[in-house]
Amino acid sequence: LGLEGLRLLDLSGNAFSCAALASLAGSPLAGSLEVLALSRLRCWQGGLGSALARLRVGRLRLLELASAGLEAEDAEALASWPGLGGLE
Image (cartoon, rainbow, N blue to C red; front, side):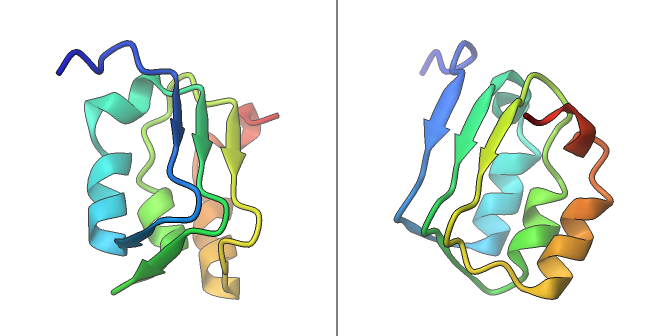
């Protein structure tokens, strides 16, 4: 599909299984993203934070999570993500 150059992915307001989100986060596509918007995302069958913790450290500078329903364990999983320091 030629998505290698995709820089912004806005999935806000959608619903996914956390397994699907984890697959996206671990895909080569995720390494080219500069902006990943997940505001108001509904994620089931797992933890959102652990799915996002699989994000490839790459060009990502903005991770939008407003009203994404993060729980304490999600925040803990994200806190250990190596790319956290590169976010704006």
